[in-house]
Length: 309
Image (tube, rainbow, N blue to C red):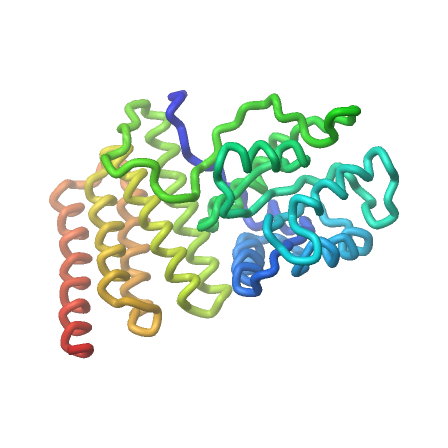
């Protein structure tokens, strides 16, 4: 495998997650709902929510979740102090914390090396950097379940063993403005294509769960299409790259969810899925699919300009 791998593994099926109980902690109601919708759409059986660490501790005692997703910056008790209070219970028993070893995923905009180190020392298992995509959240669940970290209790540190080095999918802004280094290895190429498929399917489920496309969902679609463009370049799939860029151009032209036609989003998702499903697609047919998408976007963009003009 290439050392350049930056792809998430999020191929767990909904049935694999149906028995999970997950607690989501965030003081922003929109983010709280978005994470909750992603998890439920992904198949998680029970999702509980709390606006701060103090309320989260109450739910820990009564619900005993299998995994916690928590924001960092919150009033009353922030995510960092919540994690510390959970890990302390391994040394000083706390009736509010029945399982001091519960895996914790920090969902945060904090991205500096110092911030990551602080969170790790507090006992965080994994990270998701905002803005995130459905696959970014679901991949952390898979990582926690399939590659659990041994739990350490010592005078200097209480929490998951940090010595296992893991490459996680990056969910923040793209690292560079130039084209990404191409993935030459055939296995990595297949992983890249599978990752695109997983992310699109997670996005479809999220749209269904939320009853359509709102502003938060549209922003996530945009992010997923950025990731798709990036990965398509890695595997030298020019047609998938064109299809994802067509979707990006459409969102840019419409300016908001109220102007977006769900059918246009759907045909882009269908086209990319169709392209990915073909091991050896006829180049002429692939070009026709991409050109049809670009023509649809061109017509819709022209109508939008007339409407706002």
